[in-house]
Length: 434
View 1: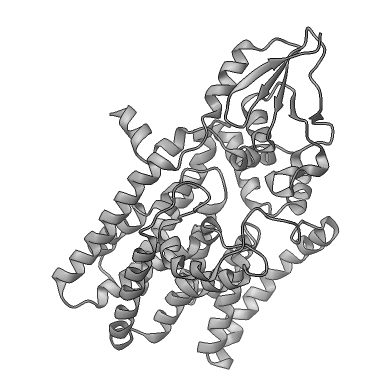
View 2: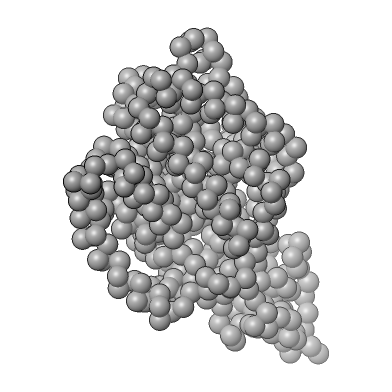
């Protein structure tokens, strides 16, 4: 049973080898706080997640499971806030709200990043919390959550901007001060970080690995938001256009009933959360490619809540149950495929074998920069180098900020020292100069 759970279900992500971004999280979190702050200012993400991870590591250790557990906590926190929205905003009863949580638990994007040592699950939680505070008009709470969001991921600034525009369009001018005054007072604490960024000059204008989108991709947006599909990560899924058409039909059909049965302001907010923000980023990506499902994980929560609002507007119980069941079954089916196909390279096994064979003078050479940080994680006491590349060749988005300029070699060491040269496919060879 345990073997099945940790090989055939999403729990397999919990024990999988770290990939470069997760190893980067660990290496960043182990830095002294001043160095951590300065390094994140030079990178593409703010420091809050790494600071939390640093504290988490000090209590629970630095194993893969320990580091990934922090994201799992945020996943469950997202479920709880979603439950609060259903209970307090949608006015659903407790039993129905708990049943609807299955849509979130089974969602392939949410639970994939619930088991990854990155800030995406935290992003989903903070964005959901922002919408909850906004819907409940808890503006002081909103201001503090917004500050935490800005220190977690820069994409959350787009969420806050959308919510500000929403308030401006839907709230009486005299009431706006109750929202904006706490936000401005709290936002003062973000000003020092802006000055740090000005001095650090993060690589916002640098090259990125994402390809620009095409006009044909616009049809895939609903399916991508629901599933987190990344065509560069695993398989090409020809059913995605059909899924998008189903989602569009469900939303358009539901809007007609929802406008008549529910508050229009609530519908506008859910549509902006789930569709408007992703569409804006998609359009922006024609200038600067930024459209990536994990950056939009918060929109997935919005889409699922939109589905629930639509399902609640369906008067025929049989149809409502059928649509709910269809969503659950599709999510489970997609999850089975994702667990089988979207796997991380088994680097832990490779490094374990190397560790057992290494002698005191031996070193590690990686032929691809993607393997540099995982090697530093799994072989922390060994010397790790990038082989036959220069510092200038390495792109910033692979964690270059944590790569020393001396960590580059163009030839094997002199015997008796040996270099374990790790290839991109996980194999390795031994070399030395006689």
